[in-house]
Image 1 (spheres, rainbow, N blue to C red):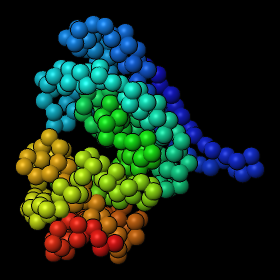
Image 2 (cartoon, rainbow, N blue to C red):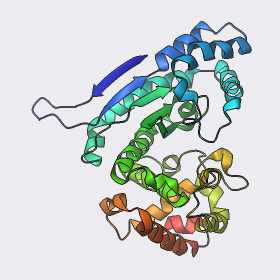
Image 3 (cartoon, rainbow, N blue to C red):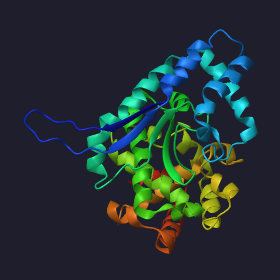
Image 4 (cartoon, rainbow, N blue to C red):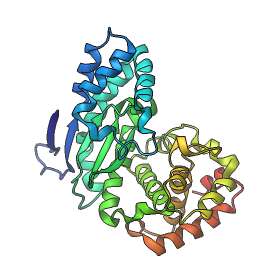
Length: 317
């Protein structure tokens, strides 16, 4: 396992170094690719067995229920098989993303430091094969925060020119959690707010990236939500105070959305954050939590509910 402590600064020859966000970057992709190449000619079942022996056994915490939130632990082998079949057809984008993504965070270090004043990156950052769990996520494992990038999923959901927005979104989560603490994650309104504010931050951090990319997968998320705007807003308003995992997962995990558009909470949360940003500075939004946050979100949702659909809400810039 390669563990690299990176403190990135970029300095012109005649200018003082710019401060940077310092993170412990743990890149597990070289080890995974070594396994992948060494098992290229074995059958699928043998490859999955070797994956458990050569990869999972070294990083078991990355494949457990604290990381694979909402997934059936018994389905890990099935998920691995599906991804191995896909990658065996063409792993070019996957290999390219393993290089591009690991390089992007160091490259963005000074810009992140400027955009997130006072931020100290105390969570280790992993780049690894997530077996389809996510492209990026913050997880708490054995009481410690980890920022995790699932390279194989990112190779399908992200494009090289959009990585600034993607990495900025995930890094903002660490910053926001340091400001508010983890309690916000115990309610549905807090989780939707986390994602909405992170999406608004990434929009501002990467203004040249298209909004459809800022919103993440699926690319037509806004178009899917707009015809059902009243339903998704009603769901969130009705369940603002929900604390059970099944209800809190529904707006944010694609596999849990049921008959509603996948990940609809990202779009709704983003529009709520943008609505509140009309009257409040970002620093105030950053520190909103508890009853004040709940009240502000409920009012914004009801205002947005008056729009015919999400498109009308989105056009009020």
